[in-house]
Image (spheres, rainbow, N blue to C red):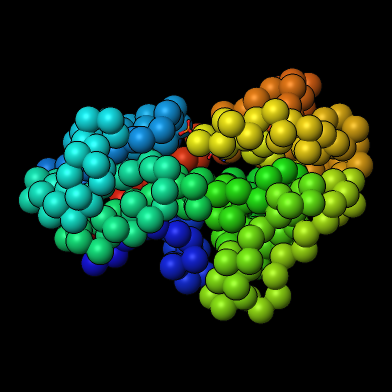
Length: 303
Ligand code: CP
Ligand code: NVA
């Protein structure tokens, strides 16, 4: 039984194959060549937190592949409180072919995966966002022809999105550097996991965003306050001052550098309007790639 919980579980070759299939599916979709690899299959989508991109791209992707999706709001299914994770997993395994979940605690996914006889797909947890990471790598591949040897400078919080991207980069030979205020870098658990399962050499962490972007092909940012951290917002706004992706920071990067953001953006906080709406920004191409990357994941798990 395969799941898609963290990019760290996949080999570099598997990630490369998913990216190639995503590109093929994107091209087929653009040419309106039908692909019905999920005909007759049903995918459940459980969301404990809000979403635009993840929900819509999964629903569309399943439909484009000839399958059906079911939206199951987290407050109705009550994972772990209305019934146990084991009972939920063993019940839904009878009805549907795969489950996509957006959860507060990553442990919820591990708990379900233990009992489920259908694939579990992580649609974002507090620990990781592998669907995002895959779409990010697809975007880097499209922007530069190949991702290997490129440099991604992540300016912001060492969060779920940063972890997944760092792992994906490490597995595919992309250099990754994190620029963050003290105390907001990668945690020790992640560092140990990375050294054991990705590379003994851990990505560089710096406190100066200007130093981070100097050799960057991609400047990446995400919100400073993730879903579930709302109580820390004021403190985070103070601590991340100076880490905004704005015209001044962009000017310190090579002229060809592109800007990515997983979205939603908190414009005026981690990124300015002029950068978001400017020529270097590829965040909407990146958002579009969620669809194609996830279709490749669905095929990989279900075909
Ligand atoms: N990037 C992303 O996962 O967007 P949503 O939160 O809108 O799904
Ligand atoms: N780090 C953000 C990503 C949103 C797609 C969050 O978890 O809220």
